[in-house]
Length: 159
Length: 160
Image (cartoon, rainbow over all chains, first blue to last red; front, side, top):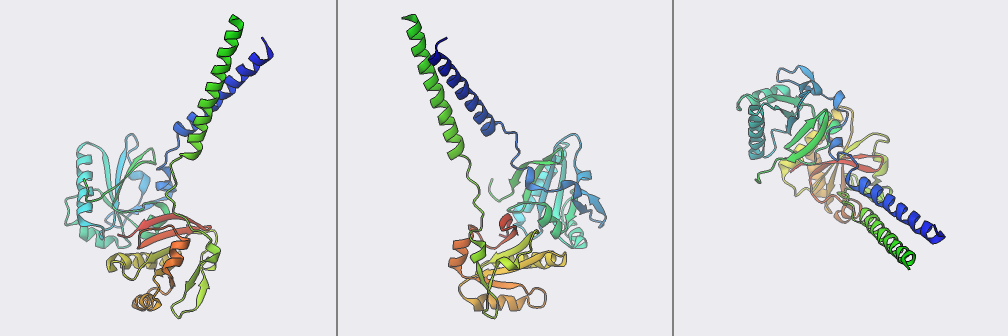
């Protein structure tokens, strides 16, 4: 094999390797961009409406996806209702669907919840919300699979 | 002749492969999805006004190594949204977090009036001029609670 043939073969090989690596890095990095939306999920504690602390991860489905609606009672009312309706229909489909209200007053939320049909509602303290949850806007629906957020859907009045 | 043709094909193939690789590298490097752009520039130069008009640098007000929660608001924002932000700061402060409320306005009196309203429950009110806010922060929507850690915006929560 001539010298320049060897050079061109090496050049082809190098080019192909660069292309494969770049395509892999760009499109198949496997990194989930939503994974950081809930940080230290194992350490996160929430409260049920009887003010009993519960480990957040214990509320999530072990085998399937779970859906968590995070909101405050001061968010747009239509958006909250829309989110709660989504939770109800997900529950009907057999999915684990949880409502997480950001508040420091669990008793107040328990009263508020009486106006709505029973939904799997829990309360997250404000400090835990700001420390653990990275949500730019509320209400927001997180899809969580294997303790990792896989989808973030901001609930708005738009369809 | 056949050998020369093979060599030519080889050359063309190498050149095409290199061009394709370079195009991929170019796209990967320069057309990556842009960051949301929430950042602070020249933190060390940011100057805030206390409610008595005294100028203070912002950097020493931030807790080193931990997140500092800052509610940026304009006194012209919807009162309920801003009120929610200040109440969240009060709650975070009670939990041991460092919190600041920064009014974005050229009129110190407008921010000062709001600070008086919360005087009994929250005291860390400051003011920043609109142009200074635009120059140093890329946040476009107010009111907002930002978590700033090690000079970087770690998270934002819009209050509207």
